[in-house]
Amino acid sequence: MQFFILMLFPVLVSAKSILPSSFSAQYENAWQSATGSTKKEFGSIDYKYPSNVRIVVKSDPNKTLVTNKKTTWMYEPPFVPTEEAQVTIFKSSSHPVIKLLDSLRDGITTSRYFSSKEVGKDLILTFNKEGQKEFSLLEVTLHGTKPFKDVAGLKEIQSIDLKDTNGKMKQLRFIDLKEGMNFPDSHFIFNIPPKTKIIKG
Image 1 (spheres, rainbow, N blue to C red):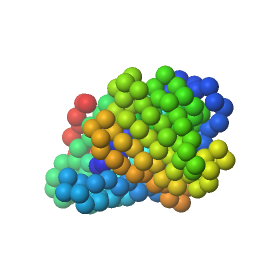
Image 2 (spheres, rainbow, N blue to C red; image 1 turned 180 degrees about the vertical axis):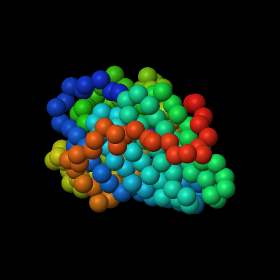
Image 3 (cartoon, rainbow, N blue to C red; image 1 turned 60 degrees about the vertical axis):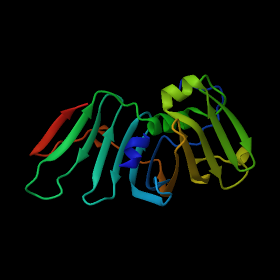
Image 4 (cartoon, rainbow, N blue to C red; image 1 turned 90 degrees about the vertical axis):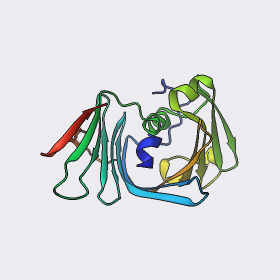
């Protein structure tokens, strides 16, 4: 559930925004384990601005995260049918990656939380102390498919590197991205199945 662990800026000065108001994509999340081997997680993500996300992690069995501006559900189904499923409910939507997605929609420039620098095809966001506390991130690098000054949308982002405040690196890629999805509000509300243990986070 690395993507869960990895997930609002005020409106920023720049009008440039690279994130569509909604999208659906497959994702690949990669990180290095304590032994130095590369681990990967795959899944799907649906996003609707602001702060509405549904993530399904491809595992055995699949896990689900659903969040909106008020509530977050983290659902883990049972490994065997005789066991009880579990859902943890939080009365908030404060996942760092969700905040990052919202910030990309607002626009990218220097803010109270970070400074930004374009270097060739990359945009590097360096977080100050306030930003590190808010996002649990030290640095984020967006790798464009062209010089970043010409990048116009999320489809032109090859990958996103995230360095957290513990110095750990993760790389996120969106695959088969579809923009302008018409998600109803109900898509970002999790319907708890029967025989599920509820934990208040």
